[in-house]
Image (cartoon, rainbow, N blue to C red; front, top):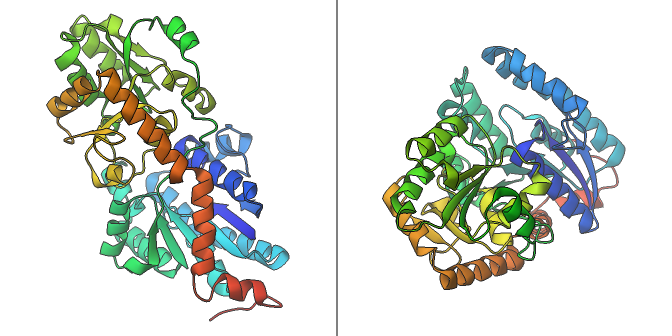
Length: 398
């Protein structure tokens, strides 16, 4: 199939990984992919395009930035329309972002199916985590319309599906497709000796976390749980792979308790190096998760066969089953997290959980699996690909 992949992101962090991996997976299955974006095809590279648009986003006042997002629909629609006329794709794969109607409108205009990948309900996210949403009603109106008019909507979690149905997107219109992982890059055979030697982790039982150190990722919660069991388990060590605004307060908390020697913060690490540090973890933790997310760190932990501790939330249960391939604890409860960590100090339990987690990835949690599922969804959508492929020329719809 010929796939027109459109996104309007900076292509860094988890979003850049997702974009790159899905494009790679479609191509690995033999499909032809053409990418339309502000930054070109490269992601997570800090290219000149990424730096330029990052500066623009920082410099524009909030209200102006949102107006700019709306204004993008004009050039976005034009670029997608030109590609449709020139290339005649079988379908458009669009990564949803706030106010971006361009792909859906172009698909409607030319009778090309649009598969919309939704990773976040931006009208909710921006009001919850960002400083301010200047046009909340308008953002919600765009969100509802974009999702309702796509051919199919893919959400990364079950709670995210519930959010969209609550604003009027038909349930039968939505398919839950959690994030994936590359099992050839994140696997249990990666050695840990070099990392343990570099950071002085020999003969330590290492609890690990990967991600940006922000309050909503729960580093303080993890620290409190660690303090509760540290005295009973003197070999425990906390390895943080990442950096962020919460780092200084985290290090200060360990210093105040005289436990600085039992904390290692690696700082920011390129994504292709993260797996080497995860290899040195005995217990891999996601202390807190946004309720609608599909945490990529958990899938990477699973791919590497780690014993995982994570909050007992509906989106996490999309990925993990308690006591089968992970240990789930009561969300926001440091004592419950501490109990889960204490359980995971058992080597036999860690081995069983990690083995089952890896098997779950191999069964159906890879990016290739996700790409296959997208193709299947497209093929099963009435009046979409069959009509688009068979048509002798492009047809406009009203």
